[in-house]
Length: 307
Image (cartoon, rainbow, N blue to C red; front, top):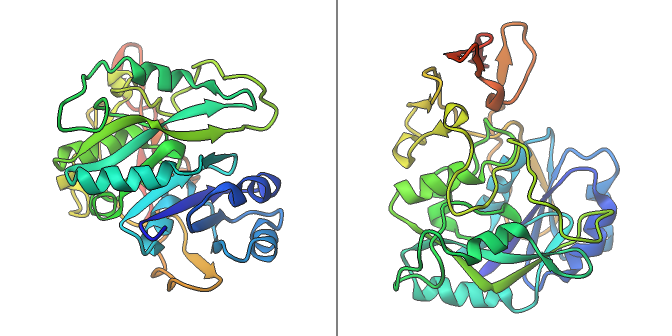
């Protein structure tokens, strides 16, 4: 298939990659987030058809952006190192995106474990609380799991992809950015992703911390911890607006440069390393920027972006 590329991000999960990367039926780009277990070498040797990108530092979820930039296809699907798209699903997704040019993202049904039990998030989407507009291929959503998403590459890159400052996850913020830019997002249960996390034999309970935004139809993080932005803010140096009332400068680029290995697409330009640090100089994710203190919106400490 010439329309879809799968981008997988991983760190120190060599065995899972060797097991599940061959299950994809479209071209695959692996972005290795500075693994120390020989992941990149092992995949290059065992799966020469997989294009491997070696990141010099752990770029977190934003490593998906580097993979999307390298993809030479109009659509990009994301997968984890312990998940894969069932055969035929990405072909159907490409057809749906061709027919619905106003849709930027489709999210699939997720089946968990060897028994293929439905992920509770997929069950929540089946309820279609935001409705199913007649111009969409399925229920409208404002959230998703990255492992079960296929995006229109140009739209994804235009809004900045996954926010590199958050380091981990960021699906809810990306969904809001796409919606703010005028794009539609839809859940299509006919598309299927298998998720086989190590050690799990049954569907996990829908118990997730604030580190992962649930792919429910709308953002569910408490208002005082929500981070809001719009597509217009991306790439223009405007502040990211935090609900705690404090603004920090919006930075672009990843947390480390990536060095590609293998044939095909050219390497992306090295990204400028950005991060957040405390006044003591230690790096921490922006999601811990502010907390409630005695019921008031006060940051516990001063944070600033590194220059």
